[in-house]
Picture 1 (cartoon, one colour):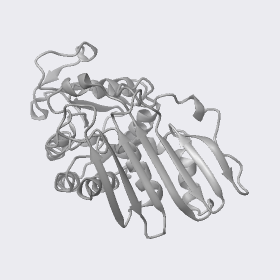
Picture 2: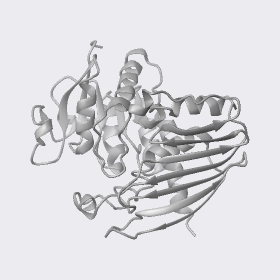
Picture 3: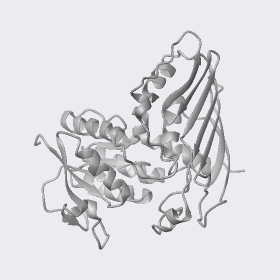
Picture 4: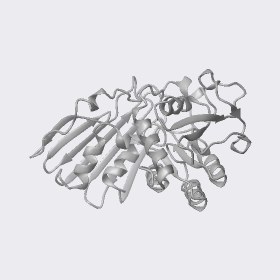
Length: 330
């Protein structure tokens, strides 16, 4: 393989611009093509050659970045894998377990990488909290409260016909805006053994939920809660509160803002506090630092054959958890 990994971006919506900006900061990667069904090229991508499908790309490329709507991720991923191209997929990996398993199987069969952009795992203070949890340094965790209270106006949902639908979006804020943090919750605490939820639609003309809450019981005894919303004006940074036998900590937008754990000094850093993107009121991402972590790792995985930081199997967990939330309504 060439020293430069060449990417084709699949999809030309807002998130495609995020990846285009992020790739520019990766020394051994470049975007060489865009696949899009749109009749007009977005100005930010217009300098790149456009193609209607992956199979029509007539220039050399090594991998794809899948930026299509949620429920279409498997279509592009499977097609790319069959062509021997590596696959980096935007979150959530897909909206059904059957589609996800198709992606995982196709990439394994064709010996290509399948990575997923759940970059919040490597944002600010999240990695150090994960290490402390895994090392059992925080004491017995008994309560976790996660709040992802975003706001999106009706224009956001009206901007594309798939938004706010079950068949393409896969649901509302639980599968979409809160997906990053549900992945983080699973990464920290594992799969709950019981889920109960209540969802509703309060502020938008859409077929899916725009607000809801779920309660979890874990085999370890943890009682967890997740609130996810796009109806809570004006939108707030995501917050996770963790209570343990040794004290408590609070993460806001991935940064430890409150810390009182017996015998352990607050591990947050000033650098971490510089991360300002919250996603609370807009999906646009100005700071691509976390995407660059995922891209650098993905490029390295292609070159070395090692697993990505976030594999298809690992990313599957978040979708499975969301589907349990949707299934367990009372």
